Length: 346
Ligand code: NAD
Ligand code: DAU
Image 1 (spheres, rainbow, N blue to C red):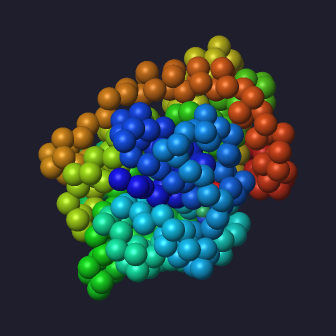
Image 2: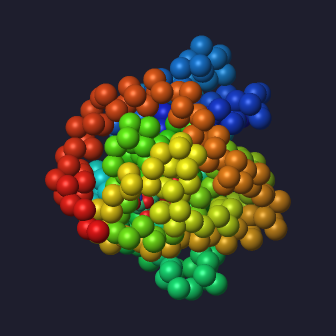
């Protein structure tokens, strides 16, 4: 197959490309990525001379550019990871999320129709279901849970999902969607909770925990997400949505304390800061459908995955130190400087 992977210079997309090259070396991968602040070509450096891999810089919302690429490459499948992905940034600038996450999805699907691509796969998120109360551990998100979003980010992802389903119904586009819980692992951009806490703890900097730290996320090691997408791409039923998650719920405070213990750093680094506006309380995926219909199960426990991740950040300092030296540092100060890190709410 000749597969277009969009957003492949980011966290999950790059892990997916490495997964595909390992598990399906016969397939060719074209990575299309705009290289926004979150995209990093150095992540893909080992592949740049691989004859089965091509990197193209471009924006998925740029219709003439996308059409020209599809005309040239005759893709068999498209896996769309490209998106603005950080909730806090969406609170600051929703419009950018609409262009990349919604318009970009439509442009890709229109190109799939025009060039007869056999499968369009949308990488979506559990955030489209909104949140669950903290005192109802019996509740989980299923594929039937109504969409009920909280942030401009999740609203943009839910909008994209609706457009994907509309393209399937109206034009017969052969689509699949996966909605996954929080990922962690190598190449995770250090503005997200786990890599932020690892890199700041290593520098003995305060660790900003929003609100009381009691919010719950359902963590999945990134390679397990990649294996789920691969399975859905090859064996999933056209038109179906599959939830992906490993029943691994932790409070943010638990996650941060686990990282501190693994690094031998003191809990006094934890700093409670002003909460995220509209902060979702709990995410929890019910992955029964993908397990029973496709046989998918995660293989990495949180204990193993978090240690592997910490080890990766320890032995790949250059990767994240280069990011911290760059524009990201300016963004971080602008986003959090006064409003969050300055205010200790406890
Ligand atoms: P990321 O921010 O690390 O990477 C996004 C990549 O997309 C970057 O390389 C960026 O340059 C690229 N990109 C952004 N806008 C683009 C555009 N308009 N055109 C082309 N490229 C563009 O994100 P991630 O965490 O790897 O998430 C990837 C996808 O998975 C997203 O669609 C996200 O909604 C979804 N998702 C993420 C998680 C998670 O825990 N991170 C969980 C479930 C689903
Ligand atoms: O659930 C899937 C989603 O997970 C994806 O769709 C998103 O793209 C991805 O970014 C992630 O969203 P979250 O908002 O859950 O991830 P984040 O790492 O930003 O935050 C995780 C939790 O940690 C959340 O409750 C907010 C909290 N947090 C985050 C940061 C960055 C803090 O307490 N302090 C922080 O500094």
